[in-house]
Amino acid sequence: VRSSAASDVYKRQGHLINVIKITEESTREDNPLVLSKHLPIAQSSLQKNQDTTFRFDTSPGVTKDLGAKIVSNAHLLGDICYGSVGVVPHSEKEGKPKEHYIFSYMDDAKCKPYIEGKEVDRYTLNWRGRFLQYDYHTVRRPSLPELLDSPKIMLKIVAGKSGLNATVDYSGFYGDHSFVMFTQKYRLEKVSTRTLRLDRHEIELSRKYMLEFLLAILNSTVMEWFFKKNF
Image (cartoon, rainbow, N blue to C red; front, top):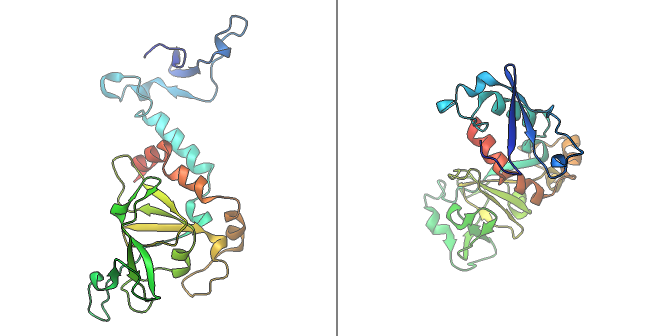
């Protein structure tokens, strides 16, 4: 265990280890250390680590407890947002590949700004200036146009080494099927389609959450850890 003003001190009591967080205030002579009550872990759980090291990020007792706390004290993203995989832009009906519908300019009024996964990184969009000639009844998978036109989170389906990778879009980009896209349910409450069923409670719940807040959680190191541990 490394020693520093910001490091944790571990004190054994029987078969439990209590984590004491050192702060500037707690190191004053008139303010004695008090054992933390919120993170006691079993000493035996550390014995399962390689070389029995004090690795709390890999200790089953700690990770199970943290994961349970996250799940028990949180709303699911699906409670707040409606999500859908992006557009599959080729057409089986017309027998044409996606290249037939993608342009470097606005060919007609049906054209929408089009983006693929390689143009998106965490918190950033690097649009190549292409447009998709979008027809709901022509493309292989049209997604939900009202979602595509709304401010939304664009989450890449293939997670990178650093975990989830998402950004926010305010410009109405039509993403391809390398994304799952989310927007708050209240933005879609007036949409009438047989495939969209929104709960009134969840619509009101979604008004409390900004896209930027949800994006920060998705891209956070905590969510990276949770995703790798559970998926």
